[in-house]
Amino acid sequence: MALLGAALIVTVGYLAKPSDKSDAPSEAPPAPSATSTSVGATGPSASAQRVSSPPPVLRLATAHAEFGVLVKNVDFKSMSDRKKLAAQLGPALCGSPSLCDAARTVVADPSTMTFDRKPRKHWLLPTPAQLALQKPPVTAEDTEREQTLPDLFIISAEGAPTQDHRVARAAFAAAAVVARATKGFVVDMSSNRIETATVFASRVINQYDGQLAAAQLDFQTSPAAQQGYVRITTTGLERFGLPDLEASEVSTASAAQMPNIFVAIARQLVRDGATPSIHLTTSALELGANKPEEEGEVDLSLVASTPAVGDRMTSLVRLQPLGGANADGYVEMVEHLFGELEDDHLLEKDLDEVQLEAQKRLPAALAKQRSTSGALLHVMIKFEPGKAEEGDEAEWLWVEVTSWTDREIIGIVVDAPMAGSIGEVQRGTRVRRMRGDVVDFQLTFPNGTAEYPGDDKVAP
Image (cartoon, rainbow, N blue to C red; front, side):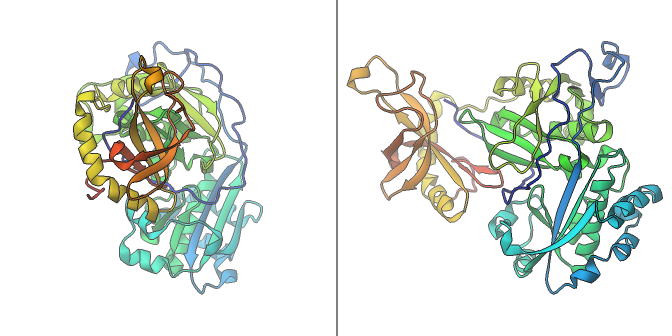
């Protein structure tokens, strides 16, 4: 049993129309070896035990970046004039003169950058409620204006990955120019994030190295295969010609620190290329005042993975710590870098208190599930063996709610009982239970954020 007792807070990305691209890593990562690339390590001890020759570089065949700008009554022909658009790419948008020259070559080449116009109704864009959950959130006033813009001016750039990241650099800069000129809102097609022209301009690539990788990175969360844990992925690295990152089974205690780890690794990948082995130190995380007192370090591997249904990326590598790509392995990795974590599983003695809180807030959670498209509600219910199984113990299992009445919860059991089944109940069984039987719940929104009985957001 894994009861969830803390909210997961990450930068958000939204589910929407997937890309039709299908790039995959050009070379599968080999097994972990003594060779690694140091991220933020300093001093002789960080490299003395490592082979001097670099490991193989893993890059995608192409880098692909795509943005849409929500607009109204725009002259498409004028806005897609390549010469005029390229002339507006200055240092604030693309960096040094040589870097801007490289970006301009992308804009000028019809085989590398294309423009299109589509009605917004053809895309599944975030709702006003989802925009309010973004970090930073879109204000109510901006959301009201965004909803009135009927068209998407789509900018797509694709080409061979380069060390100056000209494909991504040009796409960011061009989208910023169009948004500024039209006072439109930019839709990041890799995450479906919507931003004002001003906010988006803060994410452009105007440096040479990977230090801005954090600004171009978003995260998605979804339930992991093991109930009570989450899967976290990045979106945005494919525009640098790199596979995105995945942590496959993360506890709530370690999940809060995973974005810091993702960003540190992404910065190295953007700067040096994807390598199968990573050496990560606490100093590489750039935590500022939140930096732990003691320096830590970990070794981990990047292994080929497969995007799941609903993922926005088309290529993926999984973070595999020495302890394995599982909950314990990720906890060990995080504790080596941040210090000991508090146990995020509730003890049996807490169940009565948790159930009281869950019962108080369950009506609000059910209402939110019904009113929010794509929201998932899982409830924990105690299942006891029948008379024929008196020797067996009761188990608390998670149930995905499919419908409910004033008195009952109807759903599908998503946990596998320890003994394989409890009476006729096993994973996948459709069950009907009284609402008063609910011990705990987790309400997960399409943008990856979640609410729990102890979360004040779920008003009683």
